[in-house]
Image (cartoon, rainbow, N blue to C red; front, side):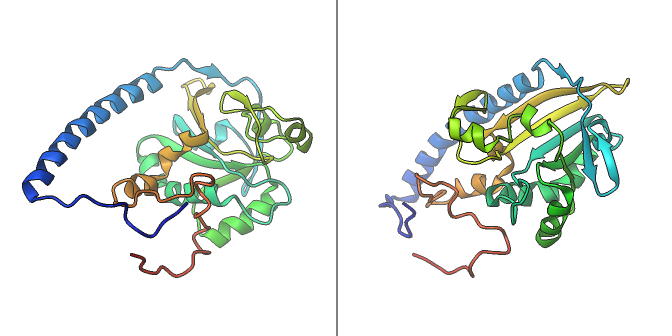
Length: 244
């Protein structure tokens, strides 16, 4: 349960604080080295050639997966939870997009394009995109098998039966749409390959607010039974108040 109080902080002298900080710093440096090794292994994963022809609905008409690269050799996709008939996009996926949105120019500068892909028709995506003020490429996979192939959309019947395939395992899932991030590469011949996908808590990689919260005394301060229940669409937060 979220709390507005601190958890019995230990008050020490500056000398003892510095000793504790240096001990933690050694662990932080080791974590950084391990993270670099993991990133290197991620880049060395084998690739899968995409042989299915996906066509998406965009603001500029029909586009293919290859078109989404926009002349670059790498593409990052956010599988954004916005299903057909939904009144608005998922608030947690919106939290992700709030972080993705300002990074796009920097990704572009490093030969990476970005696109959000949702199951809803484009006519249902664009009003929500305008409301949130995001300047990103966002296309609809409605009527294609893209979301199903990447295991981020399920039918009501699949949900009722239980045990949908998500995050590389069978599990019960409460909704017909799920979050994820996928990365693609395109070679000089125009062939497209899947190089990486991550789901579940793997999408926290873009949620840098969490990294910042991990630095402060109260940490993420979330309800363990509903960790992201505090998240709102950025235009729906109540005015901030100071809580001790």
